[in-house]
Amino acid sequence: MPRHSPGLDHAMELLHGIGGITTKRMFGGHGIFVEDRMFALIAHEQLYLKVDDQTRDQFEEAGCEPFAYATKNGQTRIPSYMTAPDEALDDAEAMHPWAELAIAAAMRAKATARKPRRKSGRSTGATIGDSQNS
Image 1 (tube, rainbow, N blue to C red):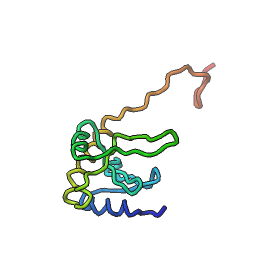
Image 2: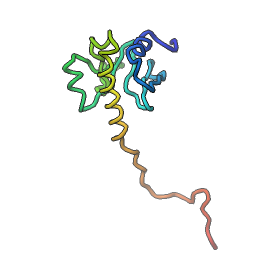
Image 3: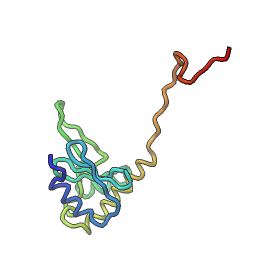
Image 4: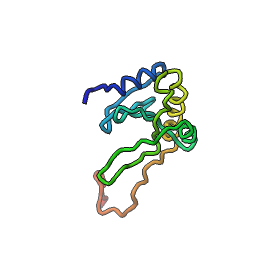
């Protein structure tokens, strides 16, 4: 796969002017990040934007569809990413408000992410650096 795809190149044109954007190859496509938070992705040359409970209705009302991909058991939908509205795919000025919603959703997701719980259990022996005083 080429480093840049036509879908990524087009998305970067639409997102021009939004500072601090970086990209990373992933999932057979590309993740698009601001401040190390993924707010968009390119899969199969399609742009998807991050949504959450605060923004999903706006995307649905604009006719956006959730990210989905085929698996051997059918299709898997990822409702936290939705297509951008059609009118925003042709004009950077129209895209920017949608991108800002996606960035805000990504920031909220990072802020509310839970820290992994430590597994509780009994120690089965001494750890490195333990010493016993006799």
